[in-house]
Amino acid sequence: MGLHCGYIVATASQTDLLEELSRHTGEFTVDTVVERAEDTELDPGEVDLMLGELDGRAFLVDTSMFLSDSPDMIVAMSARLGTVVGCGAETVSGSYWLTAARAGELQRYIFVSHAGMTRGMAMGDPLPSEDKHPLVDISGEGVFAAMAVLGLDPSPWLDSGPASVVKYDYSREAEDGPIAAVRREHYERYQRSDGEQLSEITVVVREGSS
Image 1 (cartoon, one colour):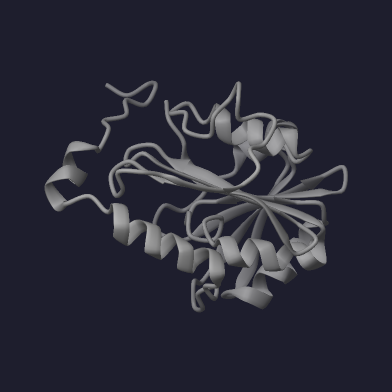
Image 2: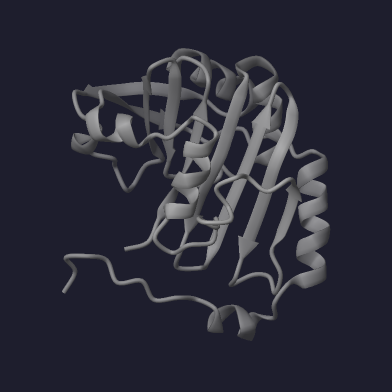
């Protein structure tokens, strides 16, 4: 139960997506390839990502949760790749994020952190999926609905593969820009105190755990 990763999805090949990420941040090295995405083994001690493509669209599972939550980078990448979405959730702390961009222009931005802020923030027009499937959903359905309504649902690829394990060295952070500046200002205005932050952390029971 719950979602604990991010996604970067784009109207591009996986090669182009990785090259564009390398332009903005650290080094990426393709490690192993598996036939099915569900068979991928990610090293919990490393920043292992999972990469693949299907029908002209590229999908990256972001275990770092930093790459997909770099809004200004996502917008910049869309200038070359077309439509790019960075989104995800860390449902223990109640954090949810979404950046949707097309041709270098921001379409929609959402950032919510129940543990860190008393109010979330949003920019741009709501996506058609948000009325029925809001982004803030502990199951992760809102995150997947947002990608699907933009034509970039990774579910078919996750169910079929193939996938590559990609090592990421996190040697260079993506540069912040105007969206990050607005977020910093919002966070400073609505930041919770330390005691409040602890009270907003949710215990998530994963299926199969004892």
